[in-house]
Image (cartoon, helix red, strand yellow):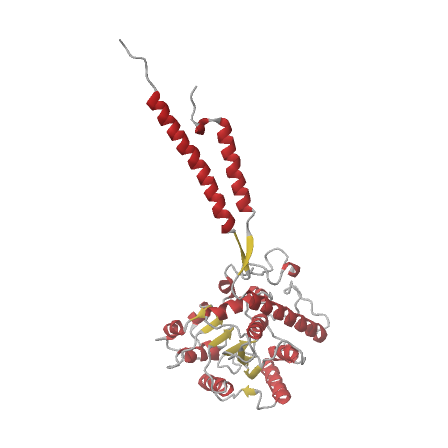
Length: 400
């Protein structure tokens, strides 16, 4: 009985085996492809882990039994106060050392490249910190050091819940001091000025004791660094425009005449981002044009971020580190107490979607596909001609 090749069992089996083999070879061709700026991201994450270790040791030294049910990673940097607003998930998520790699991602999105040589121009970055997210502050410092950038930092010391609330003993300024104090530390930059923060940037909304403690820490670091290297931004009789003006003056004074390439804001400091609620929903890299559009025609729009974006000759884009869940998207895990117990040992520096992705080796996959197609098509074409030849030679019995 006539059967074309495509209907022969042994041919079908051989084709199937060959195709399965090609698929298996293709599947085994997967490799890890490092993303752009992998080295800087890994370096930033390593710096952040180094900083977290320093701050954890300092916290344990200052607070002898600082164990908290709100601090599953045992960082020593999560502080709770009754009846104070704040997102615990945001604070915990920013304490992941790989968060620094995400900041590198945002900085490079702005067009800034890592500095390769010490003689190269170092991009100037204006930075605004609050005490609310020590992890995010540390991540920015780590990213700047890893990329060789020059940050000029101004801090609002006050914090939301689960942040650096222990103003008297371990404010963000104290944390900065711990990070930069060792001569061989990776961290070379700290705040050049600081305010109390909260409403009007002068402590409105804080208790008298909190204001007293923050003023005390401001005076402590003015004494340590000297008033030429550290300025206290606190004038009880002044309103918000004064604090915005003075911040812009300080940024200008500390830039040595060079224009700024980027503004990085961490948290919701009113002098930095203003009273416009919408800006707190815009996270990540934001172009200068987008910022101007966001603030345009708002009844209250004056702030440091807006002023940088509105420079006539050199509008400055921003990275806005707020709304952390939206900021990280799928790049990092959101750390919560409601999820399974978080194991910090599972955090591996340099691994994850921020650093690399799994790809198929096209040098192997494409030939495997071509071989499979050639074999299948060859058998199909051969069978077609076999059938055609058979049909042309077929002579049915004639009917007489």
